[in-house]
Length: 268
Image 1 (spheres, rainbow, N blue to C red):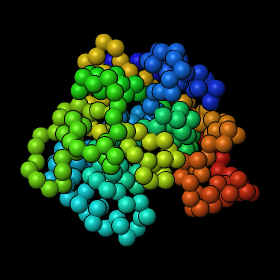
Image 2: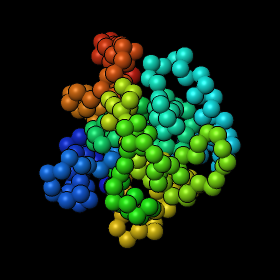
Image 3: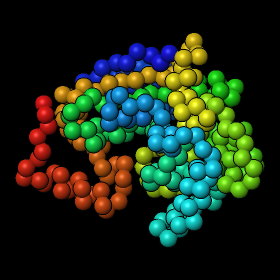
Image 4: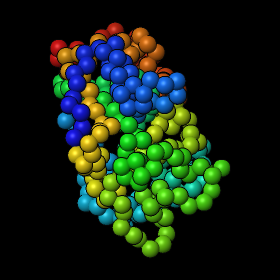
């Protein structure tokens, strides 16, 4: 099972627990590896990819969605993916339903996404994941590999989780795996994005956790009454819209928010 949820009431408490998880999962080494983090505006939300939230498992529908996105995207983006994986990552980052879940190796970025759109009416949460644990359990590989990397061509074990848009459909693996994207898009780079790509089981991360004695999955809950001060602390530490969305539109949002004469009052 996942580790019991822990309550965090401040940025300081959150970073302390994040560091404890790193030491527990990765050891106290100097290697630049950390857990991955995913923020949920609502603590009750499950770890389910967007493609599975409103529709049954249907690879044909997913194939049509991918094809429509790839056909029309070049007219709207400067980023030009060169393979199936890069297109899939781009779809996810711009809101198209996929079997991906976004993660980041930046703990405060994960926390920011948890509180960003929360208005203090319900608890938020940040999930933490040991991606090496997941891949050892699912594919027996103590590594998290880059996929869609043009410098490392050739088929990979991970390709079973992303069938080609053309060709015969095959059953998906059941459980998810962790993969690394190339930072070919500015938004993906700014958010320090990592991904789990899910198979036939919509709640595969929890299924993996239930089947494992050692569990690299944990949840931190931010109470609704602490959301506002966590947002202020993140802003003080330089984590705002422009950190995760580095463009003029989001700079304008930051400027507007900081110079509003009246701010919306939170319920607490």
